[in-house]
Length: 480
Image 1 (cartoon, rainbow, N blue to C red):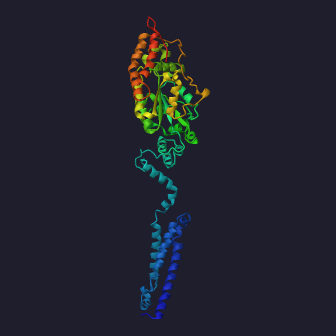
Image 2: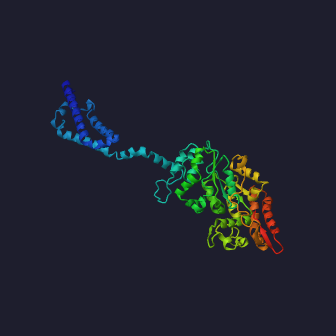
Image 3: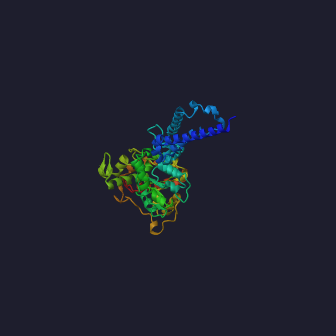
C-alpha cells in the first residue's frame, strides 16, 4: 500500500502532466491548425470541431483513474517519467490526431455546398420519378425540363401551367387538381379543314366572354414550324408558341377561366401524322373539324391561291387558275385537293379517321360546313359547337352573335357560276363520291350526324350543278 506522501507525489505528477498536455495542445492549435483558420472563418466549422476532438482525446489519456498509475517507485524512475522522449511522443500523437481529423474530412467543402445544390438535387430526384435520365452518361439524353419539375411541385393546375414553355410541363400541370380552373390549356383547337368556315367560326368565338383570343389564328406551328413532327419542334420556338401564341400568362392571370385555343387548318390534312402525336402530348385537348362538300372546297382553295397570288411549285404565282386560263375543271382534276396529286391525302376520310381514332369520342367534334352556313340550321350548329367547348351556348348576344362569312371567296370570281363541261364535273363527282360515303358512315358511327342527312347535303350541291348544264353539256358550277 502506498503511503500518503507517495499518493501526494502521484497527484502532483498527474497535475503536472495535465498542465503539460494543455500547453502542448495550445502550441498545436496555433502552430498546426493555423492552416485551417481561413477555412473555419469561411464557414468550415467541422475542422475546428474535429481538431478539438483530437485534442480532447489526447487530454483524456492523462485523466485515467489513480488506480491505473504506476507505483511511486516506478514513478520515481527517470526513464519512465515525463521525459523528453515521452513529450515528443505525445506531441507526435497529438499532431497525428489533428491532421487525421482534418485530412479525413475531405467532404467538408462538398457538404458546405449542399445548401446551394439542394434545389438541383430535388430536381434530379423528381426528374428520376418522372422517368427522365439525369446524370446519365448518355450524351444524347434530353436535358431536364426544369419547368416540368417546378410544375410538379405546384398545388393546382393554374399554378403549374404558369411559366410552362414545354409540352412536358403542360402534361405535368394537367395531372394537378383543377383548382379554380374551368378550362385546360390549351383547351381546344380548330384543326380544319381549309375553306370550311374555320375563319368565320374563329371570329364568332373570339367575341365570347369565356374565350381567350390567340395571338394568331393560324400559327401552323406543328405543321410548318415543326414539319408535322412534334418531336422535332425547336425548344425556343415551342416556348414562343406556348407563351406568345397561346398566351399562357393570360390563362394563368384569369385563373384558368378562359379557354385558350388556336385554329391551324393544315393540321387536319395531316391527321395520320399529327393526330397520334398531339393526343400523346396533349391528351386533354378538344379538337374541332369542319368539312365542306369536297369539290366546292377544292375549287375555293384554287380561287384562294389565285386571289392571294400564292407561289405554287411548278406553276408559279397564282397557281393553276392563273396559268390555265381560269379553267376550273382542268385545275380540279390536275392540281386540286381532290386530284390525288398532293403529298398529303386528298380525301377526307383518311385524316378524319385518324383524328377520330387518336382522341376519345367526347374530345372530337365534326361539323358540316353546309349546315353551319345555312340560316335554318346555323344557330343550332353554333350552340352545339359551344356546348362541346364547354362555354355558354347562349353567348355572345346582340351584334356579336352574328356569324359573318369571313375569308370567303364564293362568288368573288364568276358569280354567275364557273363554266365547266358536264363530263368534267361528273368526273369530279366520281372522284369524291366513295370517300364522301365513307365520311358519312364515320360521322354516323361517332354520333355526329345521320349518314343519310350528311350525304344528302353534298348530293344536293352536285345535283344543282348538274341541273345547270344545257343541252350541249355546258354547265355553270356554283360552290356550296
